[in-house]
Image (cartoon, rainbow, N blue to C red; front, side, top):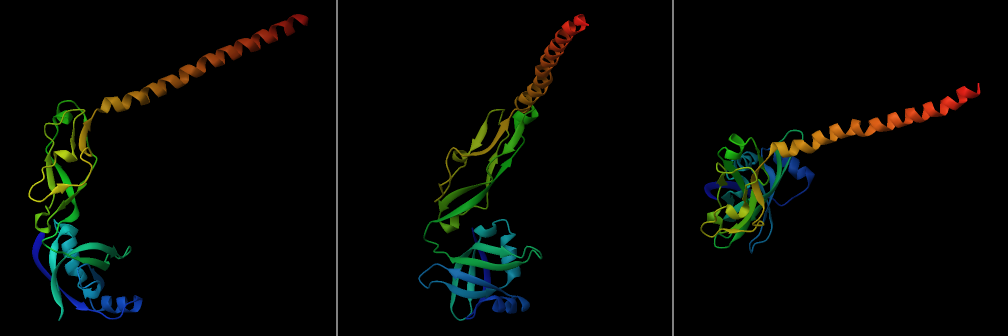
Length: 226
């Protein structure tokens, strides 16, 4: 989804660990801009501003403007990023130029809404199987998320990717039969475990009795000889 956000960027000529440390010490971080006729460009951006976008509702699907001082102002998306595993701070980001007239492929979150009747009435369990689907659409048509109402789901019923309404230029790329969520029976899952527990001691008991009888029969003739 396109947002009215502009992030300033500075071109950088040098690369490497030393340059990255220098940028971070000055409150900036390295980034690379890809795509378009101009090719790849090394830039420096604010990690705080990029983090704010990643933590927004549209996340990495946000289309915003990147303004490179003295060069270009172009729509971009975040395609990859790297965090410091200890400090949990943003270290690097990859950006891609976006042509607003061309279709692109994105993954969109899917959330469920409502309490299934199969849970409230039948005592089943509602399981979330798929949390995002892949679609193709024009940049301006990227949705924040898909919301699926699961109130009417009973045990054995499911919501699939094909049930997600596509609007505008959207086209579903994920398998249409991919399960988003379903309601399953709790009793059906518990039954096999109960049978296994009961069967184990019953099978072992006859072996102990037979073994005891053979030992008594073998001991009886030995006693008569004495």
